[in-house]
Image (cartoon, rainbow, N blue to C red; front, side):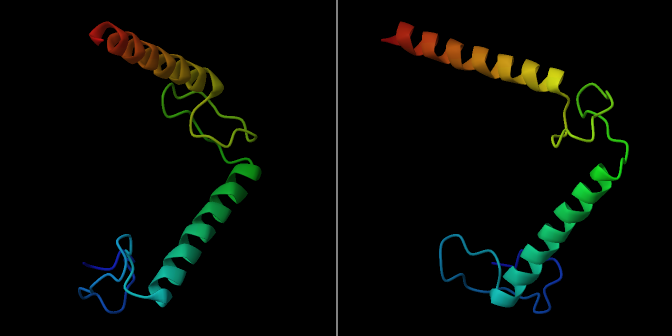
Length: 97
């Protein structure tokens, strides 16, 4: 397996010690984790400073208080369609019995 850290100095294959290991060692894991934390920090900082963001679905302008990538209307529509899918699955399972 190859280390999931793109900035890994080793860059060679390693044998994972556990089933879910994706970094070659503790150093690579720490570096990758810190990188993710800093990316989230700067993203939140940009949002709070008023950077313009738009909904991924309908391209509406997002509020600085909305932490999601979609607007509340699209989120509501998505949850409705998810709920309908689940209900259809339950109905189909009931008919199969």
